[in-house]
Every structure is written in structure tokens, then in C-alpha cells.
Amino acid sequence: MAGPDNVVERSMSINAKFLPRLQAAVEQNALLRIGWTGSGEEVPKNGEVGLCPAMPEGARIRALGKLGSWTSSFGGGGRFDIEGETGAFFGAYNQGSQLSVSGFAGRCAGFMMQGGELSVKGGAGDDLGMYMSGGFIFAKGDVGERLGNGMNEGIIVVQGDVGNGAGCAMKGGKIIIEGRCPTPPQGTQIRPLTASELKKINKELEAFDASLGTDAFCLEKSDAVDFDLDNAAVSSGDLSSIGITSMEESPLIDNHDVDTAALISGTDDESPPILLPLPVLPFIPDGELLLSAGTNSSGRLSCVQAQPFLVEERPRPIDILLLNIRTMCDLAQHAASTAGVCIDFDSLPALNDEEMDGLLVILRTLLTPESPILATQGISRIQTLHQRSVYHNLQVAVSKIEDGTGIPEAATLPIIGRSVKTNLESTSTIAALEFGFTCDAHDIIVSRCAGAQFVVTQPPVLELEDIEFWLQGLTIDMKRILRQLGLESIDQLKRAHLRALDYDTAAVSGLRMVGYERPLPHWFAR
Image 1 (cartoon, rainbow, N blue to C red):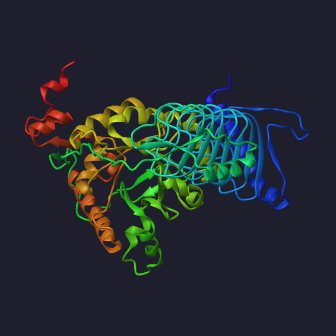
Image 2: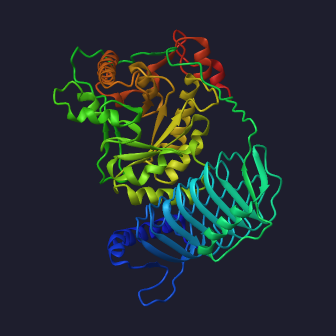
């Protein structure tokens, strides 16, 4: 049986072979086939993931076999037909493609679909049409639970029985079922189809050689009042109760050159790294704010021009694109113009390793080969994040402190330190921390001492001149602190440079308490 590395390699090879041929095939109105030899002999595929992403208008592809997750996702047009079955997230983020599978489709088929058509003739797994906001899905056969989970617009038609929770949290659109359906959840109503609706739907189904009978019914959002409760806990702490002390080094004189840079390595040793002049990746929602810095020739925005940012849209060539459930819709549009991407695991449905491989095949197909891939998740899942990042060869694992658990900032220091030592030592993956407040130089240095190579934080104000002033201030303050410590490089920072300034901080962080000069006794207990 082929291992996951072989499946990924085969998948990347197929994408590398077929995608460059798509444009020529479109111009010639030619059909590309996957799963057949040049002479027409069948060689069915078996488990390949992430095949043929971002299919363009006019493309025609036919595949044979059992395909894995994330097949033909992010499509902007064209047609993709599968003789066989497919794994999870088939046709995810479809924006205009016509997709079909003759057999079974795994969970989350049509996930975040925005347009186009998707048909399944052998039934489907859970969460078919999850969060779709447009388009048409037709499923023949039984489907799993939570059909149309959270859908906003579009139409789903099912000829078969459906599982529990059909229409849960739907905010718009229609689910039409000809088969058995459990009582829909609160917020979803069930009603018969009108004669005009049935006629209109059957007109749509002519393209699929199907029609509905008069016993079909419709699920829609009800007019019941929605209650949205936010129980997320927010940390009330910061890093001001942690001091930074020198060890045996003598202070450096003023203006002594000090290195504050951090690196985000590429996918291999040959790839050029991304240089962070400061060990910080500032986050702003829209990179359009930064584009005007490139036209500035006065030098007043020099820090902004050189510092990579984490953005949700419109990245510069040096920026990192944040991929969450919403911004992934524009992945194909921005992939060629960004230095790398950061996957927000907390915003996506939980992915198993095979589904993760499928998404990574897509990213490595659409991005430049050397582009680093980062991942972010809550600090309470740091062990899993670090382990998966190493397993899937991700370059950076970013842990979000504000993840709803309320874990105070000082308590994250032993958490990240232990996980880095256990999971990341002797690997090419580095750790980073994301804060819910605007960091200053002190916070960045404390984080670096704890094992984070850089921090993610928002600037204090989303104004270009203010961001430049903030970055310049960070540079001055960080160099001043490093000179006081007698260090020529930020790479020389160690956990031993930190001291807890009060008892509570020492109790949760395991740091040496100032004056006591060692951790509190309970940290030595076994």
C-alpha cells in the first residue's frame, strides 16, 4: 500500500503535468483525461489528492478511479467528470465549474461553494453543501448528516434519504428532498413544494436526466428568532509582570550594531528565506494599505516597505496571506502574488491527515515552489499543531494565545517551551506566537526567550505613517534592550534572561522569581 508521501508525490506530479496543458487544451477545445494511457487503456487513480485546482473557464477534464480529498476545488469554470468516487471537500470553493462524480463523494462536498454545479450519483457524506453561498448541487442516493450546514444561498436537491440535522444553521437558500428526512432542527422549517417550484426544479434537473415527484418537499430558514451567544474567554494578562535581566555579558556601547532579524525558511535548503527585519509579523486585514508604501520615495516609510505583513487580502510580494474559511475563496487570485500563506486551522472544519495533504497539494501547486506554508491554531492545541506541522513539513507553527480558553500570557511560556523542545527540536519547523494585543519590544523579546522565533500582532493604528513610527520605535527599543543585555544578536536570547516579577507570574510560568532567583518549589515536584 502506498504511503502518504507517495500519494502526495503522485498528486503533485499529475498537477504539474496537467495544469500547464490546460490553457492549450482550452484553446483547442480538447478533453484531458486522468486515469487512461495515451492509447486508451484504463489505469484508474487510487487516492491522489488535491488534483486539478483552480480549473479555468473552458477546461474539460475526465478522471477515472478513486480520487482523494480536495479534488477539483477552487474552480473558476470548466468541467470535471469523475468515473468513480472521491474523498472529502470535492468541489470546495467552486465558483463556476461544472463537476460530477458517478460514485460516492466524501464529506463536505461543495464546501463554501459560490457558484457552478455539482452532481453526485452515488450518495454523499456528511455536511454536503456546507456554507455554500450560491450554485446548484444535485445528489442521487443517500447523504449524511447536516445537509446544507450553514448555507447562505443556492439550491441543494437530494433524491434519497438524508441524515440528522438537515438544514442546520441555514441562513438562506433551499434544500429540496425526495426521500426520508428526520425532523429538521430549530431554525429550519419544512414545507411542500408548490407546483411552479416543482416545475422549475425539474427543468433544472433535465441536465442530470432526473426529475422529482410530487412528494418532494423543501427545507428553508424559518423566521424564528436567532440567539447568538459569545462565551469565549479572553485572557486578562500581559507580559509586563516578566522582567528581562542580563547574565554575565557586559553591556554594549551605544550604536553598537545589533542583529534583530528573523527568518522564515522556504520549503527546502535551496529556497530563499523570507527576511523579517524585526521578529514580528504585523497583521492587518487588507494589504491595500501597504501598497502605497511602495510608491513612496522619500524614505519615510522604509520600515513598512521592508517588513513583511500578514494580510487577509491584496498581499504584496513580500507578505504572507492568511487563509481562513472566508479568505480562501480568493486563493487562486492571490496565490501568485504572495510570499507564502498561513492556514488558520481554527476557522476550518477539522482536517485529518489525508485531507490536510490534499489542501497542501493545492497550495504547493498554486504557490511558487519555494513559498513557505505557515499554520495557526489556539495555544491549547499547541502539541497537535507542532506535531502536524512537522509531519506535513510546514515551515512555521503559530499558536494563538487568544483562543477562547482564557490561558494567561505568562502561562504560555512553559507551554510553548516544552512543546518546542519535545516536537520541534532538530526539525525545520519553527514556532511563533500570536497575541491579542499590540506588542512592544519587551513583549517580543520575552516571547523570543520562551522559544517563539517571532510574534504576530496588530499595529496600534491602521494608518501608514503610524505603522512606520511603530516599527521604527520597535527597532530602537529592541536594540536598546539587547545592548543592555550585552547581546549582539537576538539569537543569543535564552529563557534564563527572564524573571517573574511577582508570585502569581512565577507560579504559572515556571520562571525564576526575582530575588528568589529560582523557580518556585512546586515546579520541581514530580
